[in-house]
Image 1 (cartoon, rainbow, N blue to C red):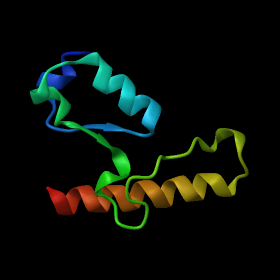
Image 2 (image 1 turned 45 degrees about the horizontal axis):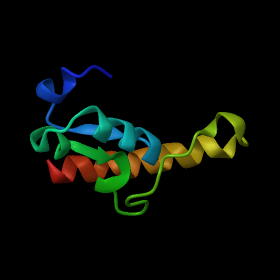
Image 3 (image 1 turned 180 degrees about the vertical axis):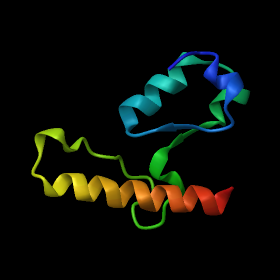
Length: 80
């Protein structure tokens, strides 16, 4: 992530709370902070949940992550 992304993009999406906090700490500008969201904030079934890291879990974890991200993307599209 580059600081210039705050000016370039309207939405900055984080996969989990750790990344969300990192992004909030990168800027003190209220104009930038309103662009930062948890990816699942726009979803319906998994609203405001973290996207888990599937790499050290069972193969079913990848399907769960796909479900979470599809839900979030559909919600973001509806929001836009």
